[in-house]
Image (cartoon, rainbow, N blue to C red):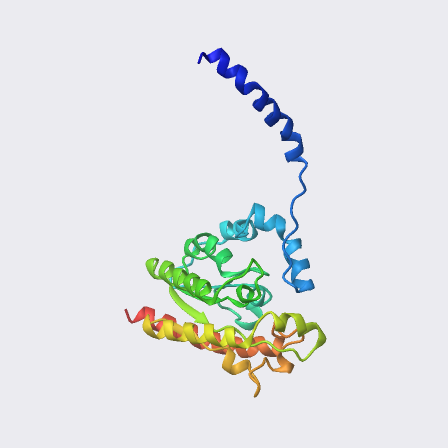
Length: 264
């Protein structure tokens, strides 16, 4: 068949395809799938532009990272990596005079933290990294996540830190409570058995890999295994009293990590 005949045969098909382009362009963007939890659905919808344009939110700390001076000789820089529980933690108020750098971002999950791990952790050259993460993974903030998925992300963080001679401290997930109306949905999204399972995995992983496990859960839980009512208004984020307890435990873990570094 000649080229001219082939073109003539294909022309009607090409015409139909070209006509379909405007129709395809006008197709509505499918809505984000519902989780069955209205507050979470609204939150996820509000973050679509983040998920599409800057999933790990590298822009969040890019300027602050660039402006951070190199650690001085003898300075023990510590980075706190996490979600809103870390983000809301005013570290200078709880660790005065310490070179502790807050790199928490509200709403983040462990895959998002891995995306920015080099920029917000490795490139800052800390001696110690404190990781508090996973509660938003369980809640499905960036989509459903199995415990095995979260564990794999923990392990990736540990391996990256080890490769760059950063001593890592893994903090347990905090307990949650449903003692207030504002806490009900947040509590329902974070089943206690999943929190306990992840904490047990973290504890075992730290023991097997010579890492430090920081047990916030045991210090913040009441007799029912829920976050103590006096330590949180919304059932998830600590009050000042909660952060004070966490700060004391974190400082002990950090000093242990620094001592182990100096002994090597």
